[in-house]
Length: 435
Image (cartoon, rainbow, N blue to C red; front, side):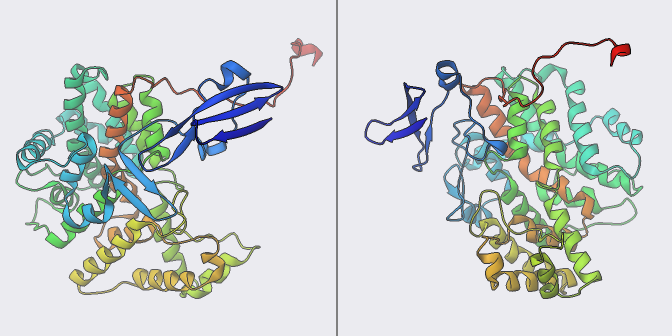
């Protein structure tokens, strides 16, 4: 079997068992090229084998561009650095969902719709009592998001634009309330209602930390840090949770069911749970070695199972551009608090040592977004087990945009990967007394 690519005719020629098949080449707007293999199985009986889908394009999308080698991330063409510095999470969410930055009137209408839908139905609030106090916020958040489909049965049709629109507002608006209630329930405090005079990030902090017994003033530096974190997490192409959102949505499951599944995918320690793993790693270093250098020596020992968390990325083979932004944000939060933390000092030592060590540099292990996000969350007083819920808050506009894009794609089909079967060949059933 041979595969030849003819650049001039934009085809790849596959020769299999004396047969020749021409496969079209597809080129994206940034020069990425792909071989279209949709006819492969029908015409040759072959399928491709690609564990983890690292070489497989599942869709054509115009939402996010990533160049992992150059450390580039753009939402709808806008560099992440510009959005993090100049935009807000609401403005960025509008961009991701609609393709263009909003006018002032469009942004005001968008924010008004979000504000209108932040309240939870009182019966939803009663659901929390069914969970044990020790329940992980991601399990609770996923369950409550899925339950929204039972409260809004008038807007579940993924093929109805008006229903999709109102469900989009509801999900973006209610997710902070859902996550904050999960946190409050776990610590035995009363739930807080959202406040319409606060912006998105301010409302999150208010619902997380205010109590009925005293006034709570949202620190603008902390609110801006949360806003930047949400922007940086808002979209990231076809990652595990986004692919889950699309996969579930490909069956025409409603948006709440799809988002509930995406939240559970994000919970995994190899995905959204990685920032929690970073903080746990830093605490482990503080409790044991007390030194980043000593810890890195353990990581390099082949006989030691210690792993360096928050370094390296499936896509980025250079610096994760989001990590550079978060490093500055972490410094700003800690300056506002008027102190450093042992976790930050250990993290800075680990980063400096790793970037000066050929063992890690040669393996392209650079800090990723998880390395500093957990430090910010912890400095703000957000519990470790709630970190991933904040990740979900940021990623929701990206999930919804991808789900909506798929629903409009005429080439979209229900997700159904193939497999290579390696089990037993046909055999005959034997009655139990003969086995």
